[in-house]
Length: 470
Image (cartoon, rainbow, N blue to C red):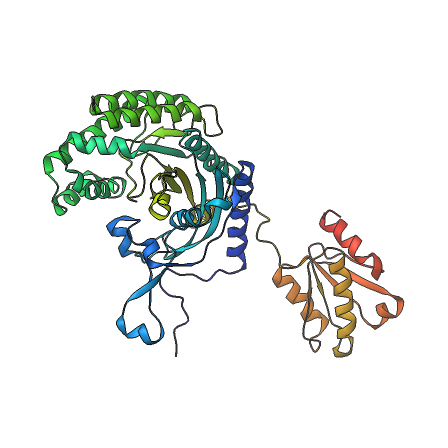
């Protein structure tokens, strides 16, 4: 007997699951469009060379490769791959379709991606991403708008206790330079530092050792991170226990202190000074946006993807392992396809994790998972099937969701029971007597009330009882 479970890391979505996902997507889409972003879709399958080399060494290992087909299958070689994220496909589209796109191309994309990762709580091999990107400008207004759009979307979904952490890849580069880590080892060091929140300082030390990185450099970097983090504990009671959610004033205080500490650490390093200048500008712009009081500097934030070139962001929620989304500037990625220098910046919300958190914390509207129909039309007997379908058509024309009981051999009482178990609020009955008089009986399954009226008035009456607009 074959297995009925889906492959590990993949899931079936029952009606309630789909409704939750569509609700979240609907809210996010509405917010993105209010910020002037347009929809885009790309294929699930990309040429493998499109994806390889864009996500770093570990990312390459997580790409779902598709073997060559037909007579080439025996080679064991792959020429295609499932989409790993939505950013690289966007860069390919801009390179391919650039002349048809506006000077400043702002797009959102909500589609599934696939990663050959180890499944865990809130982590799947197939999952949706909600991306929002802006192509064509180096202005820090872009970063501020992306932070605002992501913050606005989460707020509309009911999140209030979240922080958008922000850092800069060039600050991290200057940080690594200052402790004498060679440029060839920067990618290894950043991959290790990106795991700090997950594996702690001792874990990062082990990562450094396993990658052949100097222990002294690791200690210097972690000491700097610890000194900055201690400010949060000392000044406004943050830290491991997270007993206090920072106010907007707390965040401003934290950002001012952290900027000064970052300036001290990079000294006269030109790249580091420029990164800090850009971060300061982003924070000033954010202060007058929808993300005001939500964006905090995080000098230890690394984000492992190798294509980031500037500011990087990540959304954290207290008591949640991992983030709800992240992004950053990736000015060189489009040029890898087009050969032209095209600036770009983007943000991705983790739809699956958002849904998991909202479900666990009961954040969805109470009436979201509603009945599959507004009314069930019963069948009196096999000979009345045509009349039942005609009534259903009339009710649907009136804007109602209508289900027709398919088995005319079942007694009406059984059909009422079926409606009750499905949560359908009304049942319509048109027996021989009602049909002879051109009437239909409606029963409210919630109150037990039953009334008989002309069949032509049934749709209007049901809409009024259900509180539906015309």
